[in-house]
Amino acid sequence: MKRDCQLNECPFARASSLCCRAAVLCAGGFAAGIPFENHPWITLIAPFLGFILCKWHLHGRACLQQALLLPSLFLCLGAFRAHACFVSAKADVGDLPPGVYWVRGSIASEPTLDSNRFRCELTVTEAGLGPDDLHRCSGKILISMPLKPNNTSFAFGQRLEAHGMLLPIEPNSNPAGFNPQRYYSYRHITRIMQSKNPESWKIIANPSWIGWIPQLALNARKNLQNSLDKLLPPFESSFLAGIMLGSRTQIPNSFQDDFAVTGSSHILAASGMNVGMVAAWLYLLSRFIPLPKRYFHRALLFALFFYTLVCGGSPSIVRADLMASLFLCAKLLDRDGDLPISVALSAFLILLFEPGSLYDIGFQLSYATVIPIIALQPTFEMISKSLASPATSRSNGMIRKGEMILAETALLTVAAQLGSLPLTILYFNQFSIVALGVNLLVVPTLAYLTGMGFIVWAISAIWLQLASILALFVLSPALLFLEGAVHAGASVPYASVFVSSPNGAWIFCYYIILALGIRMLNIRCEERTQDEKKARDSHSGNHADIAIGNSDPESSHSPPR
Image 1 (cartoon, one colour):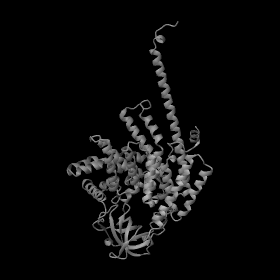
Image 2 (cartoon, helix red, strand yellow):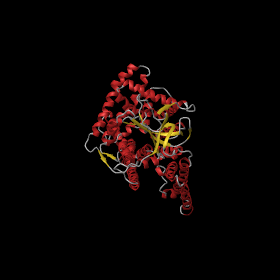
Image 3 (spheres, helix red, strand yellow):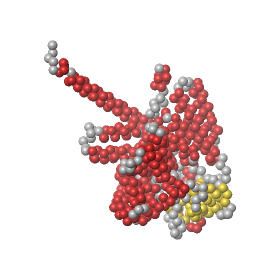
Image 4 (tube, rainbow, N blue to C red):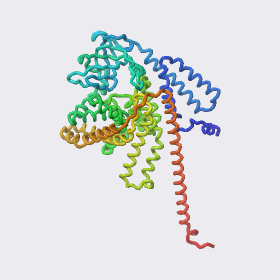
């Protein structure tokens, strides 16, 4: 009885609360400790103070003790892990003085084109003063090189050898206050390599210790891009490759600007939405394949992992793949999946292996959009049930399903926009007014193009002529519609408003207000759901009493005495 009273008094007692989960507390503390990489010893104060508070002021309150001790312990773990990765690293390429160097490494970001040059991040493994004087090295640099005349293809994950002038990144700021030197320093990139000679770089073969699965994924990516080039015109081919793989190398900058103005740049980035759509299409195809669920879940695990490698393994798509994998592993173990714990564990694993991902824009935007969506699940479920109920909708079945899809798309778009708004303003200094309307049009089309694109690609390996016909009548109209919707949204006057970069205090207050608003909205939805359940129970109870009364022969047929 005493334990029940304590749990009722504790604000962290509800199991449905996001902050009550141990995994969420651990992941949050680990992420908060990474910025203390230069002074990890300071974080030792946190568990000491937490232990004192738990010993003297919170004795017997297990929930509050957990909420204090777990984040403080993982705060120290995150600080020392980041210190081991960044500060204690030896032979870092960022410590080299300015000069001409040769480097080898793997492409760590999707290459971007600017006129006749390309730029990307390179994870350096070897560096030296000449091609025969390379030594093992670590760190990341920016590469800015001219394109070759034969337009050699390159992609995320490929090995590259380059030589040129290695210089510090200049602290040039735009009128909104964006400082590239400060931004890249957060990601521990302090050098940029530049050259004017197109022959100063080349793609090299992966070392023999690279597994056959990543190499197979890279070959599948090349094959998919080559197949799309054969089936579609150049612009539509590059556009569909951007939707399916997140590749932007061949998409014109003017068209990318239209996506940025309309708030739909996520379409051209491999993210969790792509993983969800691929999983949904595979679930749809599994209905036509007589395969037990257990074997299908295992096949789906491998398929999503392979798709993550094909897309390049950016932080956003790795997060989605880890979430889906944890959810499917729970299914294989005959347990119910838990989305908040899946999100927390995916963030913890990514930061454990690469603490610098915390400063990656893709990582920040990915979790800033998915956390509000998961937090608003009770609201989404209530609205979906109200739309699916025949008593609240006078439409027939097909129209009702269309209303549900439209409502869910609108709610997901609003939740994602609310979660990513401060970061979008901070990094891009834009606020799109037409984002909601444009996303309502393009997101359903995106799901269609993702699935049909892979189906047409599979058919092209067997019958190229049939795949060409399908691409002409199935893919091209949807791509033209998507292009027209984005261009029309970008043509609206004042579609995007320029906003200066906010400070950290403003962003912190915004997320606090957003969290409180989501919590209040969920409480109201829970109360409304409970009221409706009580009304249904009382209504069914009245019907049961009437039925019992009508079935009583003395009360229904016998005259009163």
